[in-house]
Image (cartoon, rainbow, N blue to C red; front, side, top):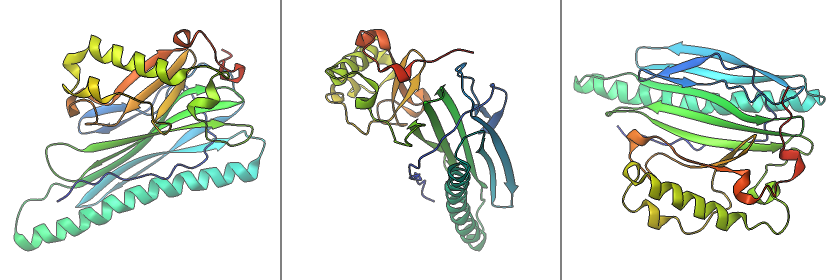
Length: 256
């Protein structure tokens, strides 16, 4: 039984999330799915919770449903796309679970039901910019499951997926600053990383995932990339002060 990482297509998503209150359980752990950015916005999104349980498979989905945007056609399209992506991930795990379950029955060996959990969180939102993170958890046998994390940083005016370059003012050497800060944080907590982690950080890839905060950015790496599974995702918060606040004005958060 092979564990697979599901590659989730990055779609343009215009989302916001209400106050932190809901959680999804996976392997006995609570995963927060809603957070409060404390930023001012007119857009609202409520999670649609869907659950399924079969002899060989169980799932919990938290799917964002957007309301309050000016473009209702885009709102509907985004909601449909988000549900489609979450369902595609679930069905892939379900198909694998059914196949392995039937094979186990033929061989007369025990089978532990597969699991799939989707959830999301938001870390930054104003009327121009949103930053959300999506988690796709699956258990397909073995000692533990695996989670893939992806972020969507979106310009709400154009629908553009934002890159590092879009955040900072022209001339800001953000790449060198980010690499320096990541290496510093690894060296300060070396016991939490693989021995080779420090040396492996040499350049900043433009597609290196990140999400926004009201006072900085968080650059992160997937499970096992820099640290053991037990350490979780390797996250490096880099405050805007490290860039001498050379940040474009639209990335400022207006607190309600």
